[in-house]
Length: 462
Image 1: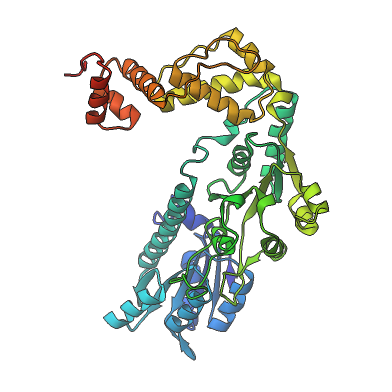
Image 2 (image 1 turned 120 degrees about the vertical axis):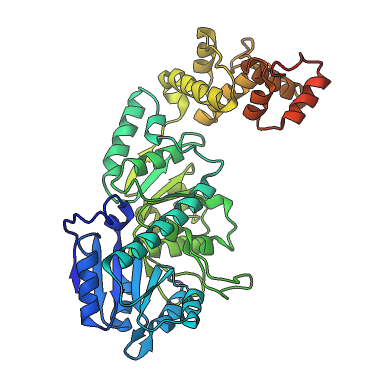
């Protein structure tokens, strides 16, 4: 039995985006309870399925993704708890609310041990079950968001990525158009370009402009994960799947459900893993390591590489069938040397961003500096330009013109670089050492000690 979304004036459901987008499976052998839950949830959710036994529920889980399962504990032939234990053993991590008319402390403890997210006693009112559903959906969303934030630490800042595709050159105008067109679809996208051409920013812009922008964006550097654990990282694993698997764990595909999984440096993926990824793309299912169950996924894949994948295919280093599966929509990113007119807006954007991050006043970018920038080939592309701006901010100067490359004053004396940076931050803070220490991310005591070593002026905030 299936019902779809409809209108509702219930304030309990209003304003919760996860409830409105939720796909929920109800498993209960009582027709009256199934009908009650359908009437309660269907007007408020994207999709609700209701079945009377675990066999029918299992068949649905083989083909569809659900955000939440509402499971009766007393079912014909077996308990809901025993079926839940089987699901967890097979690597299905969907949250489950257990409902039962016969509850005691032992049952509640067993439910938690089996992996239930919540426990509701029959008979219950509409508000009770809605509150339990909203709690579970919100907790799951928070868990995914926290996981993604931890993985994003040290990568691209969480600003509007589309605003960081900077430039007026014909190449960048075309890039923005391609991003906007591809964002409206669920098609797989392959982003190509040299190192430092903003491939991750482009992937984030794709996600931000898509209809599922409120879902997770999960970045994965395929070259940074050891070959022997990458399958577990992507697909998850069940307890006991290998020696160190003391508990089951979700994979990155699970955390990206409904959103975007960004596979950077896809050319570095080991050949055995390429075959498994191909099957995932074809079947839209993943199999956790050690599990016999395949779990449906709803994930948009975006891959990126600075390698020539066609040449890798010809050399037998990359699967041709995977290459063609990934290369549905291609977004090629031009190197900076081929779009000289974009150097100035990029440099000014980096100056504005970095001066805020470093707590330093921005440096003026003179026309002579821009001329040197435009004459330089930038082998590291926009990333190298950003590093040059950061170095100039720390040193307080772009330096004198050199033979071609932008010439900052350089020194191998790290202590001198540190001194210049700290004194510039102190000056930008009007001599207030407490504020300077906050901007630098060090203790006031450390800053006082450094200033004493350099015979700096006494603190202005005493």
